[in-house]
Amino acid sequence: MSTDPAPTAGPPDPDAQAIGLPDDDPDMGGMEHRRERIAVETERHRITGLVTLARDGYRSRVSDVLNAPERDFLTLTEVTVEPLAGGPVELYPYLTLARRHIVFAVAAPETG
Image (tube, rainbow, N blue to C red; front, side):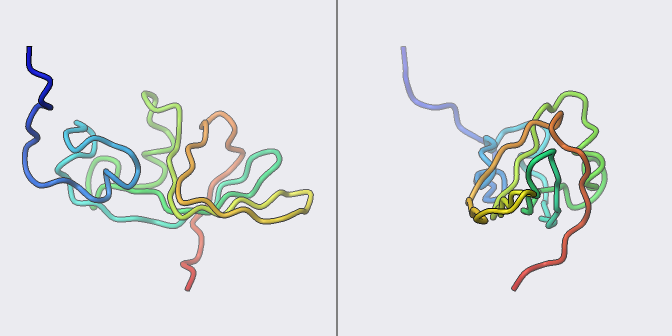
């Protein structure tokens, strides 16, 4: 019995790896991607970060990702978490948020 990993088709996808997806993910692997900055608000926090989307077609809009019935979580990178009641802002390279906690989501201006 071999423990070697199965080969993947094509070179690794850096965007897919950045959000923890395997290179052969049927929804994202091998596709061209773009990242869009969004702001999401929950009952207690305002969360801003980058979501990875398909360049065009299926799952190329934020609403496609937010409304995908097979996905219970939204993954963001380069994340800022700000408590709505005040307090210190926290920065994270990666965050996964349960969709059921999202009150609303909007496009956010690019930083830098």
